[in-house]
Every structure is written in C-alpha cells, then in structure tokens.
Length: 476
Image 1: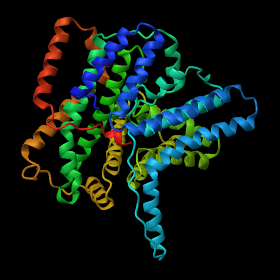
Image 2: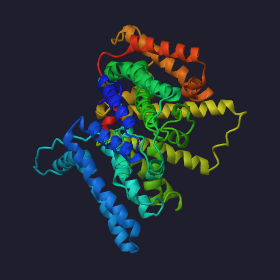
Image 3: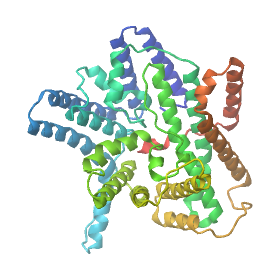
Image 4: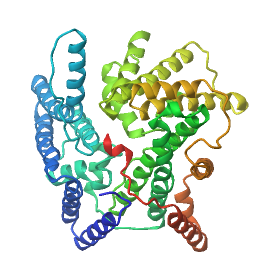
C-alpha cells in the first residue's frame, strides 16, 4: 500500500474516522495498532508473524532486563534478543547472498560442489523495525530507557504504520513518552504542506527521473561521459527525493495522530565534508550506527588505527544493511574511506576551520564532497560489476563528448530531465536558505497558500507518472 495511491487514501480516511471516534487514549492506540497490522499485511499477511513473534520476545526480555540485578543473566537476555532479531534479518536478507558466495568460493578452490541458491522473499521494512527492536532492548539493558509495561504501547512503537516500512528509525526514548499523553487528532496547514512536499518529491521528481536513470545504467558502455554524469546526478536527486519524500509524508501522517517522528534529512547535498554529509543524510540510521555500532566497537577512544578500523567497519556494515550485494559493500567502503581520509586530514591540521571569508574554500570543499557522493551513488545504483566499473570510469575520466543530441534516449527525455533537475536545485537551495518551505507556507496568508496549492495541483496533473513506483527504500 503506497502513500501516493487511492487505496492508501481510502485506508487513511477509514483510520482517521476510527481514530476520531475512539475518544479514550487506550482505544486510539489500539486503533493505530490494528491499522498498522492491516497496513503491513496488505503486501503479504504471513509476514505479520515476523513482526509479532520477535515483538513478544523483546517485550518480555525488556521486562526481565529491568528487574534483573544479575549481570550475567542480563547479558544472556540481551544476547537472546539480538540473536532473534539479527537471526531473522540474516536469514531473510543475507542467507541467499551468503550461499551464493560460498558456492563461488568452493568452486574457486576446485571442489566440484553445486547447489541451488534459495530464493527467499524479503519482508518489507525488516531492516527498519529490526534496528528499532534492537535499540530498545539495548537501551533498556543500559538502563537508559525504562521498559514499557504496556503491550499496546510497545506494539505501536514497533508497528506505527507511517514509518513502518521505510523509517525514520525511531527510538523508544523518543516515541514511548508521547504515548503517555493524549493523542489529539489534528490536521493543519503545516501538515498539509509537509505531506504535499513529500508527495511532490516522490511523484513529480523521483518517479519522473527513474526512467532516464534506469536506461543510462542498464548499459553504461553505450553512453558518453556526459550522459553518465546526467545519470549520476539524476539518481542522486531521485534517491534523495524518493526517500526524503517518504520521510516527509511519514512525519506529516504521524502528526495527524498526535505523534512526532524524527527528522531524517537536512539538505545533504549542501554538505562540505563526509562527516557533514552523514549528519544530513538518513540521520536516524547514521545516529543508530554511531550509538549502537561505532561506539560499542570503541569509537575514537582507542588509538588512530582503532579509530579508522571502527569507522570503516561501521560504514561497511552500514552499506551491507542496505542490501545483500557487493555493490552496497563497496558503497560503504567508499564512504568509510572518505571519513578516514577526512579525519586524518583534520588530525594533521590540513583542514582549516571554516570562516565566512573563505568562500572559495567552502565552494571547493562542497564541490569535492558532492563529486565523491555522486561517484558513490554509481556504486550504490549499479549492481553488475562490469557495468559499474564502466560507469565509474566514464564518470572519472571525461571522454570529451559534450553534445546531448542524438544520444538515443530522446531529446524530450533529456530536456525534461534537465528541467526537473533545475527545478529541484532551485527549490532545494531556496528551502535551505529560507528554512523549510512547508512551514513558511503554513504561516503564509490564505491567498498565497491557495495559489501554491493550485500550482502544485497543476504540476501533479501534468507530471503524474502513468505507472505506480514503489519507494526505493522498500527493498532495504
């Protein structure tokens, strides 16, 4: 059930009516839990067991962790929770990948082995709610978050449908305290324009760029460097608008039911260094990897080598979190390498503190960072190793062809792609300069708000894609 479909609109209206009819706080929470179950089972009813089963385990483990004074027993309980959650994630997401690579490795040693690599359906959102459950039990183990004694509250924390399948990744310390207050039903101009912004990103920008991106990277050898650049920039904008568009809509939908979800993006394409990029891109995953992987590994508390090792391991596993494929590992490695190089340069005093007067340096650092980000997006997007290396070579070494005429993807496609990219760049810069546009529009006068809504409606009519496209992060 996609946010931008009539089916979801009907579903949302039914949930809003049921939520509004349920006056008591407990009844409203129960409505949201049941609605979330229906929402998740819309894809495949059987997979609700993957959410409910570990949920029961983690709920009881957290209660036992809270009352147990025995360190050994508490470690065993935490280990049980992590084993259940990571075990399910490993089976559904990585078993086929590991089996395929094990087969290749054994064949490489000369052994005449053979087996059929299993085909396992990946439950939507499993990476997101697995990380949420792990963070909950770890925080209870660390005594940073009290265990909730309400099964309904815990079920709603794990299953809340607006962010269930693609985040943001929510922590119990952020979500559960909100459930102790009344949950007001509300819909105001701020919510309207936030959801509208997310819908515009997804439908008008991301989905209309997807065709050119798919065609360019299906066979990079067929295109000159300028088209590879066009494809790389288009994918960078596509994945940002697709994912941040989902996050915007999730946050807006959460507010309808009186629940605040965390921000997940902060204009990442204005980042000027690797650390800055990861403070802006997929913020809830970045902070999760920092607090539950990088810091437990030792963070920067050890020596220089240990710090670089921890950075690289964190980014490698962050890349692997996105999917069971070597291109995601390479993507994580490239970002890890950038973080290590940046930290080394910073420690050696090669990076000056930013000042307002060093505008040229700021522009150059921004250009270098975004150049690296685009290169990394090629590794992320193209899974075929040969195609990936071809695309990266053409991206790095310009072949001198500058004409976009007669390149085979159609002048209209090129023109509309450049037009969409230009519109995105303008609005992205304007949003960073004046603050979130949806908040400004919510504060604007009624004629201004009406005019903007009318223009947005006309844009939707003109550019709404013919085919529905799922969100990119549904596959992760």
